Length: 238
Image 1 (spheres, helix red, strand yellow):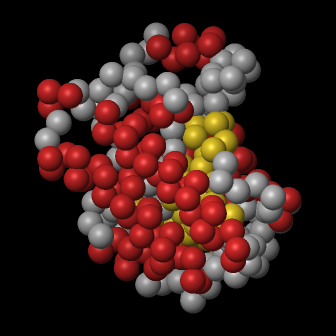
Image 2: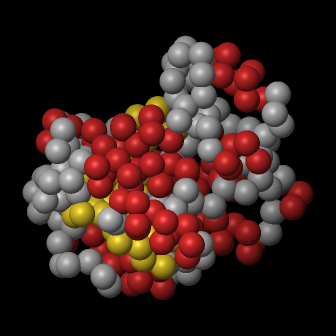
């Protein structure tokens, strides 16, 4: 597997799965640009360790699209829409503002990023959208998160048809329970071993597990896969 000579843009690349994707794509030879919202120190650390280029862009604003594409060299081979908002919000606490914010971060900006990326992509271009197992296994309090990610999955399906004639593939990767700081801070400690026991592989996922799936989709060997939702869950959902 090699991505030498490829130019990639990864949104949300300072921690967890996003950081692992940046690390993996750079290790495979890609020239990677990644976005971050506010953690300048973390972005600098990723840049120093990987050689990737950080771009500050807050996806709660549509101005993020201009910001993330401005530094690119006029060509893009790989777009990974990873950045997302995923707060737990029960029905009683939903507001129009919370809906608009999560839809903008999780759906609107990723869609507009694909729109901006497609004309820059040669044949063999790759778009990978990160979703979640929760669109298939919903949980209380995740109405907005699941709804916005389900919309992104449908965007994947439609744009796979639309961009296919241009030689561009569009796929979704839906992680299951992945061992990140976010997972540990939003779940009680006893939930993690119970979840691991429910997977076929008897463990939580690691960010590198998801990054490996994303990296594969970026290669020539994945050129016959498009419009798919790869549920990278370790067998939590079969």
